Image (tube, rainbow, N blue to C red; front, side):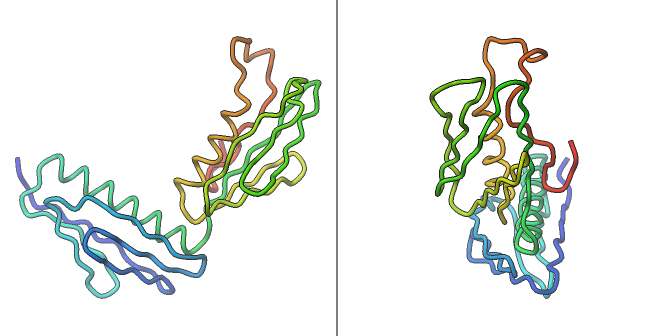
Length: 180
C-alpha cells in the first residue's frame, strides 16, 4: 500500500544546515559535518528552520530510507552542538595494561604479559584521552567515535580462552552518554 510519508527535522538555534543536491552540510559550535545521502524517490527541502523529507506514494523501501536519513541528520545536528563521547575501562587481573596515544595510533602494552604491543589507528576527527583507567573517545561524528571505541575494544579481544577466567581488556562502559 502506498501512502504519503513526511518527516520534519527541526534545526535548533546556533546550527546552520545547507542542502546541495544529495549533500547535507551541518555547521555548529563544535565543527562542521558533511555527508552525502541517497535521495532516490525522496523529496528534500528546507523550510524556515526545518528540513522536510517526504514522498507522496511511499513504499516500505522509501519509508525505511526516510527514517534512516532522518536519524543520521539528527545525529549530525546533535554532534555539532556537543561531541559524542564514549568511555572505555581498562581492566586487568595480573599484568598491568598501559595504554598510550601517539598521534593517530593507540598502543596497548603488556596485555596478558605479551612482549609485543597491540596497536590500532584512530580516524581523523576523533580525539582519544587516557585518564587513569578510563579511556575517553570523543568526536562530532557519532559513527567515527563509535568505530574508534569498537576498535579499541576489539584490539584486546582474547581468542581461544575462557572469557569467564581471562577478563582482561578494554571494555566500553558508556556509549554517547548511555550507561552499559
